[in-house]
Structures are given as C-alpha cells and as structure tokens.
Image (tube, rainbow, N blue to C red; front, side):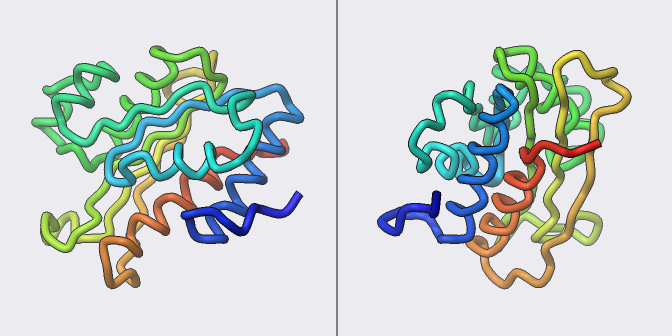
Length: 174
C-alpha cells in the first residue's frame, strides 16, 4: 500500500515507515525506540501508518542526559566518561528501551544535529545508533557511529538519522 500523500512528513520517511510496519507485522514483531537527537521523529513516522499500533510498542524521547538515565537506566558514569553521543550510551539506551517495554527489538539514536554542539572528536552530524533484540546476548548488540557530514542543516541531519533508524527496524534475513 503506498504511503498517504497528506502526511506532514517527507515521502521517503513515510514510505520507509510503511515498510517497517508491514514487514514487522508479517513477523508478529514489535518495536520500541529510544530517541535523542531525532526527538521522536522515528516514532512519529511509524505512527503516520494506519495499523502501526500492532508493531510500535512505545517510544522514549530522552533528549537530556537525565532522561536517558531516569527513563532508560543509562549510567551517568557512562555519560560522564564517554558522553551522550557514544556507542556505550546508544548501547545502553537500546537495552533500556527493551527493559522498559514489551518490544522484540529496540533501536536507539543519539547524536549532534547542530548547528552547534560539535567538537573536533564529535563534529555536527555525528549520530550513533544501536539495535537490540530481546533475548540477545548484550555483547551482540549492534552499535555504530555514522557521520552525516554532507548534511548542511539540523533538519537534514535529523532526516538522515530518521531514515537510518527506520532501516535498522527492518527485519534482517539471515
């Protein structure tokens, strides 16, 4: 079914969200999100799709470090040691989203959308993603850093991060 044309979101995001809902629904798989720099855009994309309640269990918008700690159980020691935009923090966010939901898979996103906040080590456009499956060995959780340095605006970074997170929610054939 093609994405609706009256969406407030860009067509590419809605089309990918449709695939996420359709493919996860076929498997009976539910998802949860832990979003920071995307501010709930991934959850918003999924809820643009009719019937998304059969797939989306819940989303956590944990923009502040305190929210990451309080809602997802991310250790403040981790945040203090390596920062909110790090593999360790995204990994913890994904685990926390699973622990505080009934979802089968969780994706976490944390990053620097800009235009300020970047550094030489973590420039604007740095976004870290993690994906965790229920019952998975925590050491096998996928976490990676991407640099969307081609993006010239905050909106462009968030757009690309949303697309990437949606791709991570697609079932992987093994």
